[in-house]
Amino acid sequence: MTEVKTYTAFGLHILSEITLPELVQTNQHVSRDIVIRENDLRSLWHELAQQNEYFHIQQDFILFHVPNVAIFQMKNGNEILVSPMSEADPDQVRLYILGTCMGAILLQRKILPLHGSAIMIDNKAYAIVGKSGAGKSTLASAFLNRGYYLLSDDVIPVTLTEHNTPIVTPAYPQQKLWLESLNQFGMKSDGYRPIIDRETKFAIPVSTQFADQPVQLAGVIELVKTDNNEIEFKPIRNLERLQTLFTHTYRKFFVTPAGLMEWHFDMTAKMVNKIEMYQLRRPEARFTAHELTDLILSTVSKEEKAL
Image 1 (cartoon, one colour):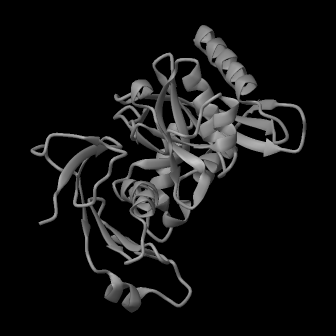
Image 2 (tube, rainbow, N blue to C red):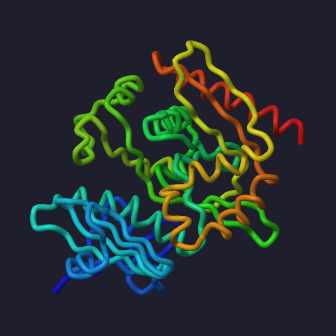
């Protein structure tokens, strides 16, 4: 008989047939928001998917196939079905459950998933967003090294209060860092688990510096790599703010086929006047995480004094 465990992540109670050691385990008797179970999805995939297609998206479910790993289905914001391949590595299956699957579930529940890392400064959340490889997790780790707390790494869940104040709910207590970043922070990779297929990227538990309560989102910082040697930090204004939030929505290509474009526009339009937004351009050629941290903290401090 499959052992079922209950976890909490993204502000949701998760009942899972698949063991998820990255998450915080909770009491088995709590009410569940999401069920994760194994199911054979091969026939459904062959019936619906087009040739050379990896995603099939409808308004009530999203189906996707990762060759040699699994077929996944997310339904109605409350169910994740997983059909693992016989040769699949369990670490890799979990990587997709906690990433793409949870991003889809959040969208289905009309919770905005931003792609980035969220840290807490002075009891407020700041989301560091950007393309893959921009340095989001590394910058967040620089904040942790100074005693600040992590709210999320990779998928940032954002909701609105009845007064349209954006709130970040904590995801789960783990970061993903490249070996180069570990070396810069003086951390040894020996004690950390490599993320599958990325032998130089590691899963870093952050349980002692994990903020486990929702907090107000005060700012979004778009991190961009450049060929210049200088750091540039400038406000994002007007309609660029909406575009930035859409660009950095996790798995944004789900939004239109899932029938969520109107909701996404409405939610982000309500958010943009409640938060500060900046673009932070950093040189690719050198390690700048400590300089960027100083710059962000200085800017945040000036904002607080101006209020």
